[in-house]
Length: 363
Image 1 (cartoon, rainbow, N blue to C red):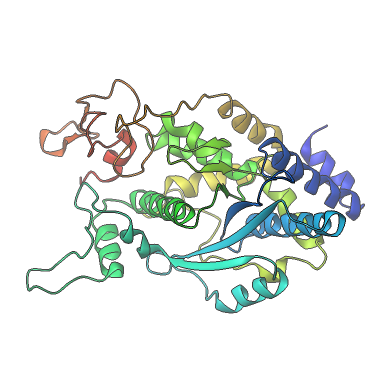
Image 2 (cartoon, rainbow, N blue to C red):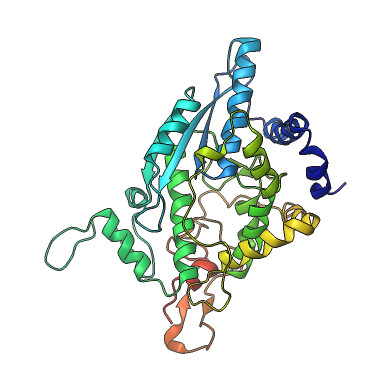
C-alpha cells in the first residue's frame, strides 16, 4: 500500500488519519527510548522549531502524549524545551513574535527559548577560510558585533549554495551547543521523509556523502547528544494534511518563510538545496515510494563514532572526517594552483572536510 493511496483513503476519516500520523511518531519515540522509566527523572528533550508544519505538528503530537500520560500516571516521562533560532540576520523571514506568543499559549506546559543565529559565535572560536573570530576587531580598534561578524563571513562565501550551506551548519552547531548548555539528552528534529531525502542528495552533491549517517539517521552524534527524527516515516504532504486536521488546526501558527517554491534552474542564486526541494516536492506527489527508498537506503549506512581524543572532526561542520583524507587537496573545477585548498590532516584540529573546504573556496 503506497503512502499516496493511504492518504487518499484516510483523509475522509480524519480521526483514523490523525491516529495513523501519531502512531508513526509514537513508534519512533519508543524505539529511541525517549521516555524515562518510573524510577528515573524525566528526560530533557530539545525541540527546535521553524514554525513550519513538521516541527509544530511534532510539538502538537508530543504535547498530546504528555497530557495523556499525565492524566493516566500523574507524571511525565520527558520534558520538552522548545527552541527557535532567529535567522533574520542571514535570511529574510517574517516577524515571529506574535506567532511565538500563540505557540506558548497553546502549549503552556513546556519551556521556551529564542536564540539568534549570530549567537553561534559565543561558541565558535574561529572558522578557517576567512571566517570571523569572537570579538573580531577592525583596524581602527573597534570591535565587530556578532551580527557584523556573521554578515562579513557570509558575504565572503563564493556562491548562494555556499551561503545556504554555511547558514545550515551554523544553525546546527548553535542548536547542539545550546542542547549541551541546557543539559538536554536528545535533540528532536521535525524533518519528514521528504526533507531527509532532500538532505541526502544535496549533502552528497555538496561533498559530504560520508557524513550522511550523522545528518539523517537517529542515534548518537559526535558531540554526546542523541539526535532523533520522529517524523522520518511521514511524507511532507502527510504532515501538511495533518496540520490542517489537528484540533485545533496548526495551520494558523505556521510562519511562512519568504522564497518561491518554484525554482528557476538557470538563476544564479539557485542553490542545490532549492533544486532538491523542487525535485522531491514533485516526486512525492506521484512517486512517494521513490522518496521513501532514498531515506531507507541512507539509513542502512553505518555511523561509527570518531575515536576518542583523536580530533577527527571537521573544524567547520564538526562532523567526523572520512578516513584517508590526510593531506588531501582540492583544486576546484579548473584545477588551478591558486585555487587549491588544503583540507589538512584528519588528526589536525583545523582540518576541514571536503564539503566545507569546497563551500569556502573563492573562485
